[in-house]
Image (cartoon, rainbow, N blue to C red; front, side, top):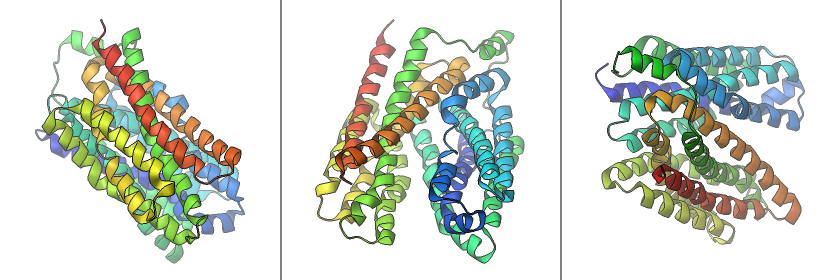
Length: 387
């Protein structure tokens, strides 16, 4: 494969299956709850179970990719997503459905880590921030496609058919990775191959991966909290639930434009530090202003635009600082920290909502967490420059 952009397109389509499958349960929720007689707590658990394996399997996934090869483990991960989707679709109760979601989630975690490594391998020389920004857009694309199509499919066929469609999309990704994707050219020496099989990281690179993962986790956890608790803020002020969901979703849709443009800008300017720090501060400020903003439609649109600058540059940090032969393992540490931060912030957001009794409290917390991205980034740069 001579064209790295073809490789990126394959990765993009494959990674879209993760957002598509994650959103599927929410998209068919009323029909699934009625047939399986689920409580809404159980339904929420099925949604969350998809991301839960990240804290446990991210590091082993990176190690496996380092030892056995990225492409091989991605094929296995997609097979797990296919199997998990089929198990969930065949469920007649909560336990089996939960097992299917966990199985899918394990596959999604492994795939998410190693697809980032594959993009880094192809774009290590140039335009890495642009490539990472494009890759990251695949998640909201998957969410959007699921929200737009799976509800209608479930209504005209069944919710089981809609869940099976997510397994079919994962199977498409499996075929693309197995038969169309090719690894970038690499030195074929025995020493290089032996180095790639080593999985131990020096302390400095562990610190780089942890601080980078903390920064990336804060950035994403802030956005997730905005999306999760934004509708509650709006409905408390008289907005209908349907309108509130639409207004908040604008932040997601606009990231499809702002994030790739942010990555492109980072590569063109060559100033990733400026984009990460200034972008995080602006996004934090806009988030903190949401509760007081007179026009919520404009407020959430501004959030979607403001968060576009940092992601591509943030995701490019670790691949530029860690040698490629240890990058998969480093990404395992990176994503372990990321998933822990994601879970902790959502728990904290719910906690401040109960503690203060205010629907605005989680939004203010999200703004503070967004600003904390700069702390993780600052530590990363300090460690990177130390010897």
